[in-house]
Image 1 (cartoon, rainbow, N blue to C red):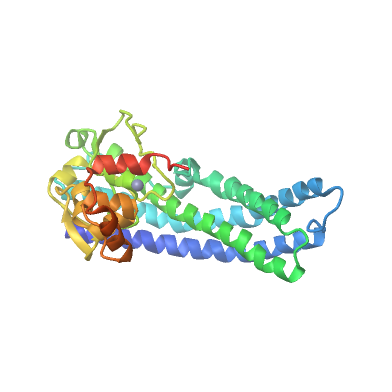
Image 2 (cartoon, helix red, strand yellow):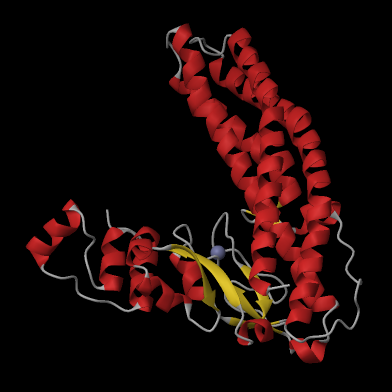
Amino acid sequence: MDPVEVFLRNALAQKGVEDRATRAALKRLRPVMAQIRLLIQDSGVLRLRPDRERLIAAVTGRAAQIIAQEWGQPALAEFREALQPYLADQAQFARDMVESAGGTLSSPGAVAPSSVAATQQALVGGRPLVDQMVLGIPAQAAERLSQFIRLSTGVEPGEVLARYENAVVRKVENTIQATITSGVQATGDLYQMAVYQLEADPAWLEGKLQWTATLDSAVCPTCVGLDGKEYNLGEAGSYWDGQNKIDPHFNCRCYMVPAKWRKRGEERIVDGDDGEKALNFRRSAKVWVRDNPETAREIFGATIGSRLVGSWPDNAWGRRQLERFGPPEVISFNKALKIWQSPAPD
Ligand SMILES: [Zn+2]
């Protein structure tokens, strides 16, 4: 099959698992969060009282427990079930990649995907996915609840519900969505990497993998900068522990592919100023960004992006900038990245 199509189908499969797993996890959250709202109201913690600090700690502690037991454990089990066939597909995808790049599988089938192991090994936001779901999300929800309780003291009872929805439920939902999206990506990466390491002919692979970013307006500048960078298996580097990539940020959608696969001149799907297109892997991501000024401004922000592409956008702000400052002073990709990464001035 056409490699671009294989890539597209894989991206679609990933999106499908993310959507289904997120929907299921959020559906399960609803009654749990309703139960916690009642717990808060019934506890009287929203009223000022002498033992309030102790009560806040007790109520939010109990809420974390409820979320862990009634959401965390069952949601994790459900997520693992959804992941199992997906992980098998990811391993197969990596095998197809090796073979389509003229490599051989010296130990085909050596990798047996397990969603239990994957959720223990894959890191999301720096901690194992299983911990994030069973401990991290309940703890973050408790923290949110404690802020909500403090800010809702003396608020009209009718308003408390709306506040609870916005300040607590929606925030917990966002965290869950990000965790699942990152989790699907991270566990899929794990099994692709396992196939490259354990099944591909080492002589063909030569231990070399290439960082590959998903090129669209949502990519982060750091990941664009890393695109194409080569890493050796067993040799640590920046954002690389020697075996797996270290995500520069939450929700990183980058993946590693055998360097030989990219060098064959395969194509990838990119989504720039003109929508989705195929782009040869030989074209550098840094050049692609410059070739797509609108997208570059979304990735870097309007000011840095405009300097990188050498023109202000064609809008009111852009015309004002041109009037006041003339054309932007052009900077290199690496300079743009440096400015973007430097802490913002106060
Ligand atoms: Zn990334």
